Length: 248
Ligand code: NDP
Ligand code: 8X3
Image (cartoon, rainbow, N blue to C red; front, side, top):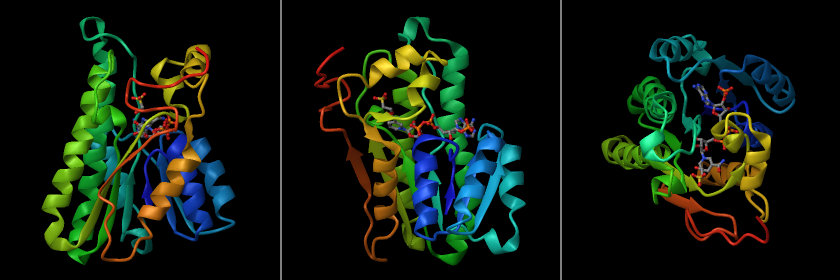
C-alpha cells in the first residue's frame, strides 16, 4: 500500500493501521524525519519503505517511485491522500501562492503520483486507488473557493478513473470527509494555532483514526465489492456550512 501524506493526520493514521494489519506500506511525504520515525515504529508490524518527495514536482515523484526496489514495485493499493487547504480568503483577495499550492498539490500532485502507479495496475489487471476528496468537493462554502474547486476536481478525477480503469478490474474509491482534526487547519491558517483550534471547538470532530478505519474497511472488501463514493461527517456536521456547535 502506497500512502501519500503519511507524515501527519489521516495519512499517518492510515499507515499505522495498515501496518498493524500487516500490509506492506510505502509511506510518503516531504518531512523525512517524521517518515524515519514512523518507519522505525511501524517496522514492529510490517515491512515499511519510505519515500520523501514533493508531489508538486513531477520529476521527483517519478524518480522516487521508479527507484523503488523491484520487490516493492507492484503497488496494489494507492492512497492518494496528500493535500491541504492554504488560506480561507474570499475570491477577490485570494493569494496566487495559495491558489497555486492547492491546485499543484491537491490536483496535479494526485495526478503525478497516479501516473506512476496506474500503468502497473493496468498491466496486472488489479489494484485499488483511494482518493481523499472532501465535503468541500461536494458543496462549496464561503471563502472555500479554490480549495473547493481542487476537491471538486478530485471528485471528478475519481469518477473518471473508475470509468477508464473499469476494463482492467481496478477499484476506485472516493472518500469525502467533513471536519477531521489533524494539522489541516494549522496549515490552512499558516501556523496560527489559536485559529486552527477554534475550528474544532464546541464539537467532536472526526479523527485521522476514524478515516483510517474507513480506508482499511474499503480496501479489505471482497474482490467483487467496490465502495465507490463515501461522504463521512462528524455527528455535529450536517453540511459544509451547517455545524451544531455547543460553543464558538
Ligand atoms: P494534514 O495537514 O495533517 O496532512 C497533510 C499531509 O499531506 C501531510 O502528510 C503532508 O506531508 C502531505 N503533503 C502536503 N503537501 C505536500 C506536498 N507538496 N508534497 C507531499 N506531501 C504533501 O491534513 P489531513 O490529514 O487532514 O489531510 C489529508 C487529506 O485529507 C488532504 O487531502 C485533505 O484535503 C483531506 N481532507 C481533510 C479534512 C480535514 O478536515 N482534516 C477533511 C476532508 C478532506 P508533508 O508536509 O510532510 O509533505
Ligand atoms: C476539509 C474540510 O470543511 O474545512 O476538507 O473544507 S473543510
